Length: 90
Image 1 (cartoon, rainbow, N blue to C red):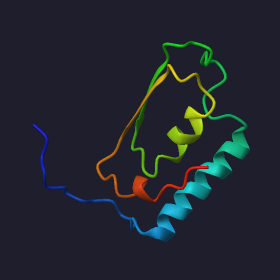
Image 2: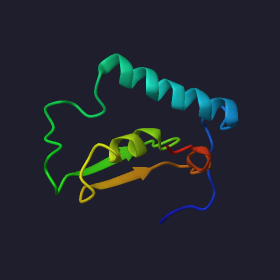
Image 3: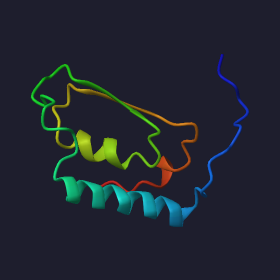
Image 4: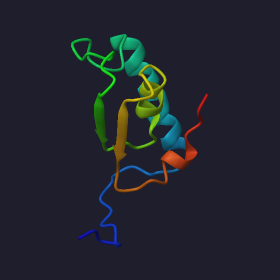
């Protein structure tokens, strides 16, 4: 059963500054590692299914979606979707 009350123990805020920090952090990690998904994972697989737990802003899933076939299933899960509403795509 899904609870409608969020027992919020997230130590940081979810404001514009922290959303920007998370998006910058995503960009820095991607640049540092040079990939979004481990190279051993076959991204040509049209039936690929990926779940992102703790999605936050959704930056990683949005970025990943632009590199995968449209037939791949990408699901993001988070306790609070307010951060993803501030995601700037494009």
